[in-house]
Amino acid sequence: MAENIKFAVIGGGSWATAITKMLCVNLSEVAWYMRNESAIEHIKTYKHNPNYLSAVEFDTQKLKLTSDINEAIAYADYLIFAIPSAFLSDELEKLTVSLKDKIIFSAIKGIVPETSLIVGEHFHIKYDIPYYNIGVITGPCHAEEVALERLSYLTIACGDADKAKLVAKNLSGNFIKTKITDDIIGTEYAAMLKNIYAIAAGMAHGLGYGDNFQSVLMSNAIREMKKFIRKVHKMKRNINDSAYLGDLLVTGYSVFSRNRTFGNMIGKGYTVKSAMMEMNMVAEGYYATKSAYKLNQGYQAKTPIVNAVYEILYEGKDAKTVFKKLTDQLD
Image (tube, rainbow, N blue to C red; front, top):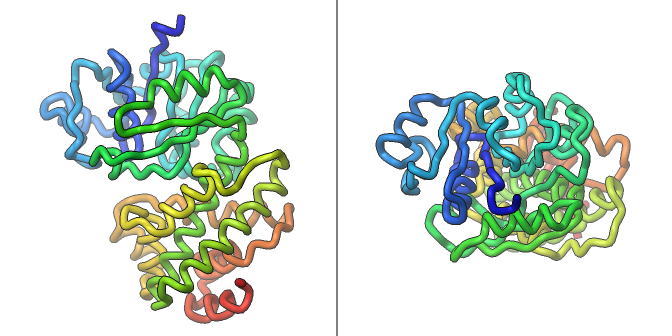
């Protein structure tokens, strides 16, 4: 069975493109679903995704490209979802085939806005997928660097270690190192929260704060993340592992971080709408901020950074004033 396991990647963005490329190194065929039919035709003809990571070349003999999500899902045993969480519900509404017995791995670092659930919980509750058939692909890994074949590390989380190992094996390569964990909930919440902290880091930069403040902000962010995740799902975990701290650092500091870029624009005085239009990419942290803030009304973890970002993005408060107040709450 293990030899003939089939994979499908759901999504046509940069992260989906990077994951498909990783799988193609190890598999003879990969199904790849994207909505954009002209992009599919372009890939078939020119072997590149015209819109994202266009430097990455594909062996099109290995790709089973489709603009029909049902075709991709019917084909595969393992489904890797890599579409922005804001679009997940709409895509899943197109389903006519069953997800029963499918193994679902989420590479989506965000919360589903319609349900305020992380992706794993969404599949479990809405589609009755057992937790042992749900996994998460996370870790400090920017798609742009995967495309440049720079060494990257992924953490594969699943309650069933054998499934995590199988996904890890098929994503591994010369430039991709993988490790596995059973902390599905913690890694997924960390992946969602770090996008909010990256927006905060960007805002600080845009407002003119320097590296000294940024380091204090990141140090507080990892502690805040630890408190939040512990409230959500208490288990033994080391918050300094790459899946948590590593992912936070790369998203907070990297030039490839869209959340940081988005925050930077807000700090410089852009409105949310104008920043989004100019970026032409989804900053997951924007949606995550609202969800995390609302969830925390119940959990009551101490989250001054999440609160500050929420006030600026959703309550229209002045970034400079909010950050001035935040500086007194950090240590």
